[in-house]
Image (tube, rainbow, N blue to C red; front, top):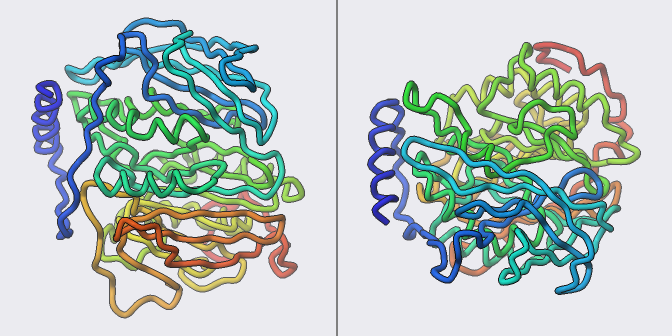
Length: 439
């Protein structure tokens, strides 16, 4: 606890140094949760276990040990019978006065789709885990939640997610809300382990993952990149901050709101190439995730370059590729827009959904602009999570579950049809159009 308090002091000094405190008038929130290492754990006990998809038939198992231990995963399709094994790598990082434990990453597979596997990490027989691989074909069910944090509301959200039979979780940034206090990354890993060790969690970064302090610690995303390694190399990306992958019949694109995104940037060029390689026959659905929303009628987070400039540069690329849905976080409330492009309703544009209401410590953003923009269909400042069930190549259903009253209540539901099934939207123009703002 003394270590946490010391790092809180570092956090306060860092914020004062940067001079970027932003204050919102938010309602009281529930207490923060701090999950300490269980006393029965040894220094080589695997903890903070989470998994992520790698290609069509592999999984990356990630975990931490406090001291050196084998980067080995043993696994099989029967509990306690580990017929296969795989070896990976481990590393650690320093952040000011903090030194992480050994962070292990091991890729296992090939694995059968829609199959339960049992595994253990670092040959530790005291902790055994299980996972289920996603299906190879539709239907598939995603849980979507942003700005998760570590509060009583977070715990409520996670309990509701645990009750849903989902295949994969998508998180559009702001995971631990560590904000320079590195032990909070460890606490977050322990908090989400019961869910994140069973289903793949695919994440992208938000502003709370940057953790850059000029002169003192000039490298951004140190903890995020070390702990939450995503399959960026498999999609031709050079950065863990943006990547894509296919699952069942859906192409998922994870974009980085807090790295360069202008037309000369690596991310922009990578996105052009990625969109140009999509085969809608194999993946009739395209879903993109960002952190800072491009459309937002809440009074919070208006006029930020990560929203406005990224939209200016990249919206045309997603539009021409007929991306179906864009999920965002950042704003601590829920909002769903109609299909939209360039500020206007457009039947061939993506549906934009803000889902930054996972349970963060900063509270809800309850103030909206009046009058409501004609493109905003549903908005509510409550904590919760969403579920996207892609039924087949043409149909999907989206539901948003509010949990302000500790009960998972479906408050917004909409059936969607893929743009690839809309004849009026089939003509896709060239992707290599820089700075275009019109159709």
